[in-house]
Length: 467
Image 1 (spheres, rainbow, N blue to C red):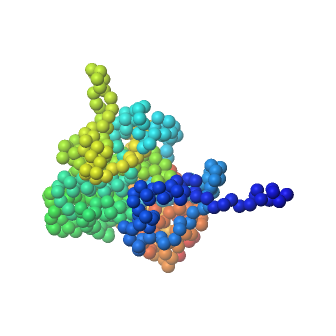
Image 2 (tube, rainbow, N blue to C red):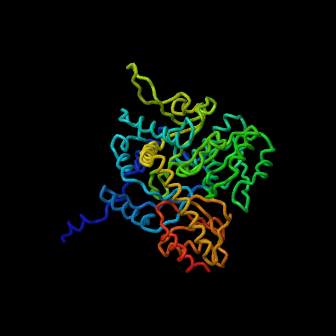
Image 3 (cartoon, rainbow, N blue to C red):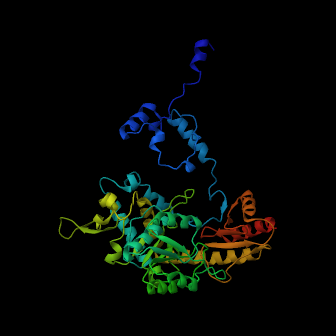
């Protein structure tokens, strides 16, 4: 190699990241000039010092080409292990279900997939597809009104509770059933500073709502809503859900129920036992897990003006056209949304998860009423078998006795090893599950993708590692 050739292979001079526009010094300075800030530090002056990183981000060297970027991302993705590669018993809000191939075929169509938020400049059937989704969800939930999906079930719960606050003009919110820590954190964050959240501990014997404690919490007055889940975060199917409706309404509050929609082929919808607002996540309805993503939230109510007027999200309905007898599909009461009112809106709702709504609509159309009954019955039976089988493992107790569960359930380890240690050992055996919910308690989940042999393998593996 000649000296000139060697010079050609010397390292490049440091350059800004080509995929981060404001990494270019001139661009960064232009942005600061436009907003009147002397420096980036001045721009972020309002961010408390205690939550600042105080060091540069650990970013890779600038990637100069599409090929380099692709290779880098493939290496990162290759570090993941999917729930298809391992035997997974993970649940708690993001579930492993079979997604029929036709669902992916439809949502991958260019008229749905490529537009921002599924929002084309010309409607190529998207509005009708979402109207069909809303209609099938309304039938499943036995209500008249269902929204275009929001980000996820957590936001749907927060929005539903804010809606209740606007309807009643009250401040307090009472959580009456077990709610996952992540969802509770999201609810608290989303409803502040307008609402105070009171969490009522569940009955330790059944895992269901403690009705006496809820009644006491309501006695303080000014309660906007009572919130419960069906099933709860513990997987419990609570026989006290109708009683909560009576308590809420007697106190002048609305009853908001978060539910898993895939249960509704075998369990009664919230509207049938007094819920004013139902909400939840449509991820179980034909949406892939996507490493914890793939979520979209629904909100559902009766067709009452006081409730419909408080939806901040979009609603699609039938609308007349200029041709007599012809109808199209479009927004209903668009003026009530934050899209129309902007900063004057009731609350902010941004990019919707509309594409997931189309996917869920395809899934519901494929399943039909009988399919939803079949899958719900299958999951109920598998859950009962899993709880019974794991209760036979020495060193494991399954709490809440004969209380029926759906998909999610809890176990308690009675030996010397912690839930975190057992989870790590399970992962070493190629099994995901046993997410710690305490020092000696853990959460598991089964769905229709599991078999009796899968559950028996889990039990046999636990027999080896639980001491």
